[in-house]
Image 1 (cartoon, rainbow, N blue to C red):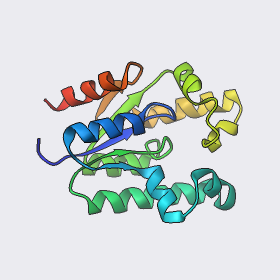
Image 2 (spheres, one colour):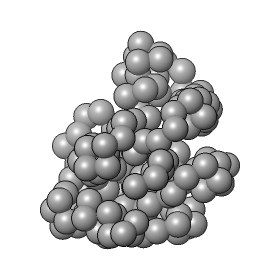
Image 3 (cartoon, rainbow, N blue to C red):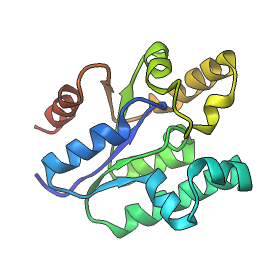
Image 4 (cartoon, rainbow, N blue to C red):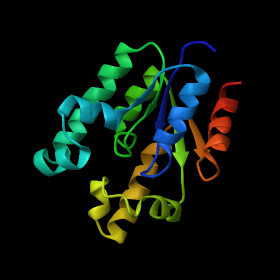
Length: 166
């Protein structure tokens, strides 16, 4: 397979990191987790960045790291943060530089997968606010090149993505 830059977008808990790691291994390309890159660069966890520097700072940093990594590596599979894929500027950038795959999950699946995760600052919001965020972000995720339902096993989701390129 020729060199590809594959960006995985989707709501929190859609499996971007888990699916991305296995997909990168199968494609024999580096795996990049934007959140991990940010934590390394800042020396702080994502919740600490939100708490100490605020969400706007984090969102700007996210976009900066996306651009730096994208322009410095010839190929990769990247797990973006849920908010990064919902940023119209980031979506356009990713579409210009690679293939964007939306891992789509129902809202109920999101709740089941993430409700007990203390490392997700946005989970502090109320249920109605989270539902609104989910629906707003879907409007941007829809602009991805491909949509893959991410409900089944990780292996099945990875195979669905690989089938897009065969």
